[in-house]
Length: 344
Image 1 (cartoon, rainbow, N blue to C red):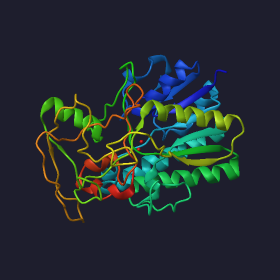
Image 2 (cartoon, helix red, strand yellow; image 1 turned 180 degrees about the horizontal axis):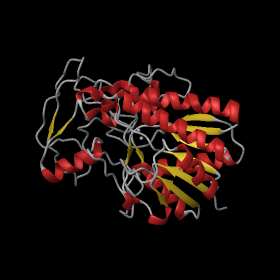
Image 3 (cartoon, rainbow, N blue to C red; image 1 turned 90 degrees about the horizontal axis):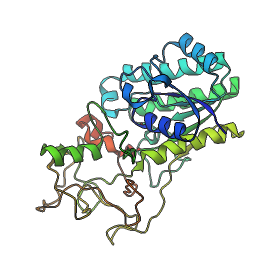
């Protein structure tokens, strides 16, 4: 059955992949993006409406015209380190923009929303894997902004009967298998594209932290392929339209039969050996702020690499769920937030 869906932030990385999947599945998609982070070329021109989420009246009018059955909400600033320097921007954009969107939905009579949240809402988790029942205790304005939006969603459900699903995840990675879409962050802060850039250009990447409880001291990150994440958002829409109640979900780790033989979780640190085709990536590793550096010994030819599970599908990659987020390489401020355990 064809659905009418409005996607905010649909010209960005995860948003554009979700729009592509929605269109491939025969749905009618309206994209709202102010193009501050997204790109016009990521979505069909006829689908794109260049609007800012702060423009409540314009959003409400668009929804009255397009009559979407649900909204998928990606539009947000996502850099933890930047949020530590400019918290006002994160609260104004992430919280204020979301409130404007929800207000427009109420005015236009749209009753369902899937919210792209983050596992950063859990702050420094006491155990892994993270469960939805863990305490909500963010340690950055970025994480706090997502908590505040989830709080808004709860009240809008109670008062306006607007149901929602919040998806809490870390470390989206990969690209459209047909190479029509990919990551285009500016500046780029995510590990995998930076590793590939380092291989191509010879310019070193910076990995913060050398005192994690891993074989080489670098932290272990978990990844979810962007197509899988996009499909999860679509399934959440279908859940709500089928009468599902407001809820929050954290991506769960699945045990996979792969790894280096010593890691039952099936992954490794940032210097885990990959396939024979892996090329060395230049790197440097300063100490994490607030923590000591236990420098793992350098081994010639052993460099950060993508770990390819034996049973990987297409372009999908899997690394064990661990103790920090992809963006921990962005800047010292963000490295301090690394133990939030990251996947926006």
